[in-house]
Length: 257
Ligand SMILES: [Zn+2]
Image (tube, rainbow, N blue to C red; front, side, top):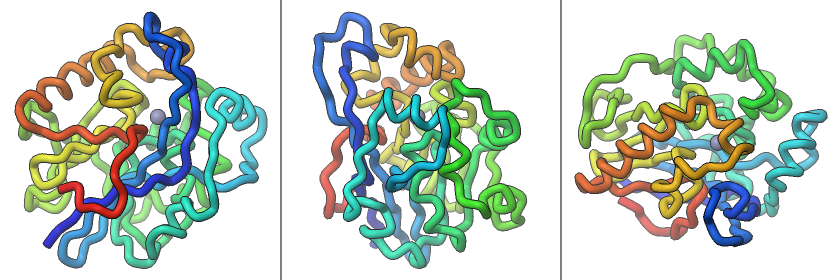
């Protein structure tokens, strides 16, 4: 039997009114969720959550933490919630700090990366929100490892999404979700549950992408693509896909499939 579980690996707080114009003031807690799909011998992690302090990430790191203060109780670190040695694959939706913080625990897992991430790594710009100090020393070499899966070709898949079938059996289809960050990736699990990463700050904000304020708009890689992605996700949902965003709260300890 296969299963999909959610782990909250830290959180941040932000006023939704500062993200979305016209939204009422609401100090909201945004969880950083890691999803683990287990099927047969495979255990596939989608993102890795926050890193514990101290972050050695310089001025850019201080700016980031001022904007989005991270909170990671020790027991919420991903390595405290599951056995890192049991993970066979790590998919990174993108390289923002709240998605790569636990990566250092998984040097033995096969990495799965969108080719766009390599472009960011080679030439990061401040607005891309990459804090290289959070990446483990072995990461640059791992991107050239033959065991690493670099995804750059997508074909029309379920729900009108552009997908790449990771294992060739339809169980784990990577989904091209451009806009939020360069190489932003989602995953369609067993053809019905769609891990949508940061395509929106939360499901209820998916239809409000156009009202995004200047700062979140500035850090968005491609605004037009982001808007188009949100439209396609809404359509996928109408078609029967269940959308799970990284920063919503998800029940823990239950199978989400
Ligand atoms: Zn992000």
